[in-house]
Image (cartoon, rainbow, N blue to C red; front, side, top):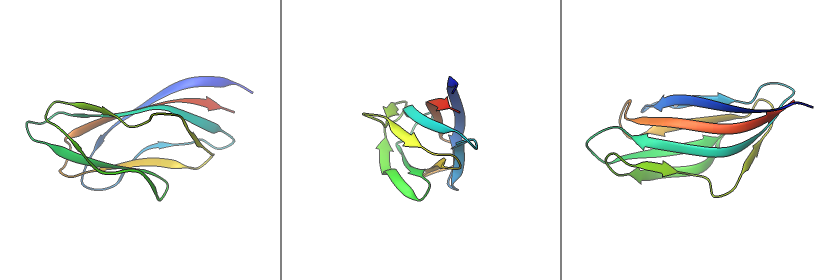
Length: 101
């Protein structure tokens, strides 16, 4: 089994955006998930693992970065992590994980 650290980036919009899909025959340990507010107003974000909320309508102050994991989250092949922002293209999102295949 090979272990490899990976990083995935996206911008959250008002429509659900899939940031990461776990590849087939792979287990992923999500070790970091953060969002940065790039605007001059407070914005909110929701983060989902499949259809389960990891965070819902969390406010991020102007120019701030929020970290959303205190521990690790295990995701299986085919699982997705997606984000939704309160307004369009205002939050930059980074997911860090270790994939095992």
